[in-house]
Length: 444
Image 1 (tube, rainbow, N blue to C red):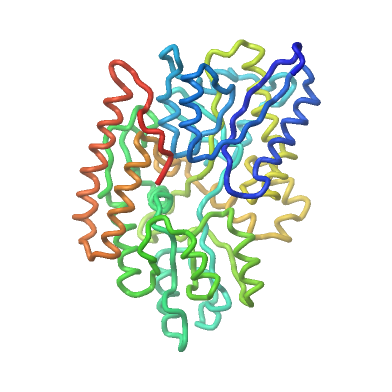
Image 2: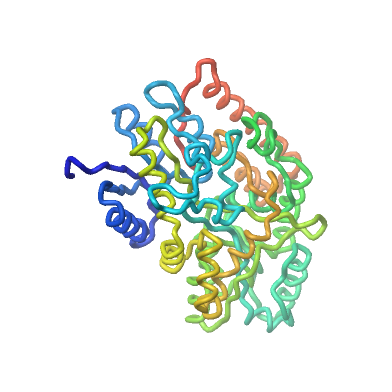
């Protein structure tokens, strides 16, 4: 690199999709062309091992200026310390400092879809920025539903049950009616829809989460509904936790009428159905009709700014962060990888060009997140030892589905184990003395 260039080193999460980072690498090239005094160096890291790579970089004195952490690692990022014993990352809100542009790049954080932007908020305000996001949708085999006399895709839990009963009455119909993986994301979404808080201190946003509740009214409503679907023969469970592929396979073979999955899967599932001779419709995730709908939360990554950068490097990093979410880049990212168009301007541009008219399934996720109430419960929780606590929750659900465990008793047991994990994490990190997390696991 020429000596007169200021290097901005960026570590981004890699996912197992062809060319996943290509749009961001192109954004780095256009940023360098617009700001020839800078050179942005992109390196991809597996999202599951990014915290480990960062920890190794700290040990060697080699840390990036910008780094992505998966949303489940938010507390981990907050607690990671540099070699000086101070937090490795600094909140982006104070770093931006009310500026409307940085190095001529418009500050676009306020244009980010609020449910995605505001997930990354804490005691110090905005702590990171999501360059993209996704959420959970319901996918329905409407060909099968029509055969069963179901004329619209269900929107609520009660409507799902009614539709499942109708499909079950079909002669030669599928063995099961609905599936989703036994995965933490589903619990978080159901809690958000009901406005429930998984942890205290405003879901970990007004202070470090210290207490967890796995037997709240909201959590209990979800896992008992899930158990009922399974008991009545509607829900398909492979017997393996986090088993996405068995759900996809069953749905693709018309062994199900419904599947809950990521919004990223919309185009693929619709194409899969078309090729197999049935119609698939993407719809919002069904909610508990016994309480007001509060909203769904995002999934995805946060882009974090390293602390202690000199002003030129700091502003270059912040400017690149805004450059990444410029409308043309957000639109390309959405079209290329199926992630949400992360800003409202990008959504409007796609609408104006007729993209959503041609691909209506790609609009559902944005509309779902826009419907969020923006409260601590709907934004989702921030807490430590996420992976271990996730394992306690999904193991409890596994026992309910496969071992006839009484759900409230089993989740009460899981709550005890989860609380011990959270207590140990907090005692280690919060100190005194403060310490970086000793577990780098992102999720199970």
